[in-house]
Image 1: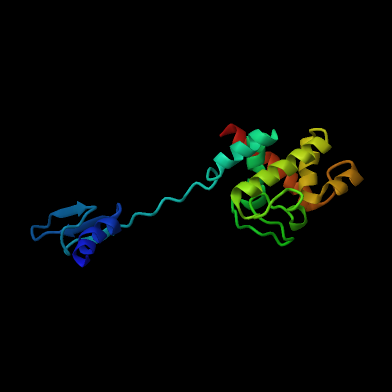
Image 2: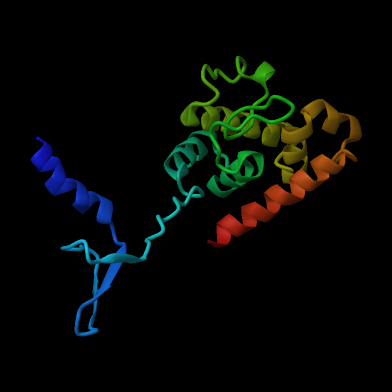
Length: 181
């Protein structure tokens, strides 16, 4: 067993790092799989960062189809709300990818708000409700998603709350960016 580990572990540890050594004639040798202890690490491979903007696309597509909310809009809300962090918790207590408030979890049939599918599906349904309630007026629906529908009803406009005004601009910006990409 130890012999097998000794044979296979170096292959896994190497990845695509580049090693170099200079032989007695001054010749440079480069490899990604050193064959002796003479080789020294020359370039360390940096692991590629996962593209989190696409991580949940399959779930967003499904929730968008089921709810009738445009894919790019739902994705923009997730970007603005949690930056694709399924474990996000806001200072106000909103949780998950779509930042659902705890008091809304039961109404949206969400048992585990940190489960990406449950959270995205719940957020899509809530966004659909806001779009319907405000007759498809996207800025009002987004303001309601952020500040609550009763506040938007009171002002009959985007409420004069800096956070909500900035939120509406941010989601619309992401919406158009995602539509173009």
